[in-house]
Amino acid sequence: MKIQEIKEQFGNCPTERLPELIEAYKEDERSGIKAEIAKAEKRLEALEKEKARMFTMLRFEREYGDAGYICGIDEVGRGPLAGPVVAGAVILPKDCSILYLNDSKQLSARKREELYEVIMKEAVATGIGYASPERIDEINILQATYEAMREAVGRLCVKPDILLNDAVTIPGLPMRQVPIIKGDAKSASIAAASIIAKVTRDRIMVQYDSVFPGYGFEANKGYGAAAHIDALKRLGPTPIHRRSFIKNFMEGANE
Image 1 (spheres, helix red, strand yellow):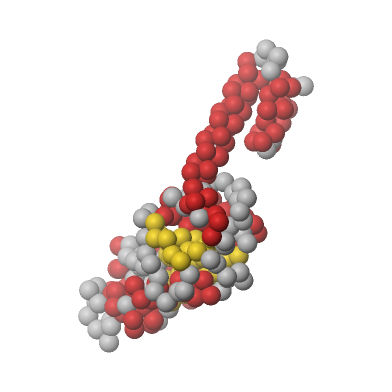
Image 2 (cartoon, rainbow, N blue to C red; image 1 turned 180 degrees about the vertical axis):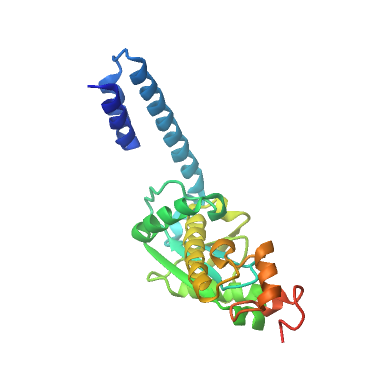
């Protein structure tokens, strides 16, 4: 076969099947094929590293495996000036084999979207909870976050036996809770929750961008980017702005 045809074979080959391809061409002395084999071996090495990382990410799930259904909880959107706070709840299967789960902030938007689809397909149960800007202003961001988390748990189709939380203990829930500092980078379940919460909230803010043009919601997702603050001062607040968050940027915005 021509080198270009073999390169296409390597390029289109799923990583798990690369050993077969390497074996098939290992005796080929052409430098172009040797280079493809070297690239393939690097892909396999990276895959093994990712599997090892995910084994570590599942250590809490293994530790509490006898407890029953383990649910990861996380939230997105505590800091923005506009839009809701969104919480995610995810129960992963006991034999979870999803790779690349991580703190949603460490992933590209494209990777989050890809993982969102995988999580929604493979999870035992998922739940999303929301707290509106009005609710945030009414009861403060911390209490609104707890409210969104309780809603996310309540929307699960399976009742969890234990919650793995990103650093917090959620009041008003009867099941055992395990707060984990930086849990979205240490627990696969919490990471999955952070991903579905982030993707859900980002999609909401993209929709709001067309409803309230001029604030750059599609790009800034409601966070306090310079262009957003400038638009806020020029155009005034929208119904999705958190009055308790923007009072330092404009007089009368919280009236």
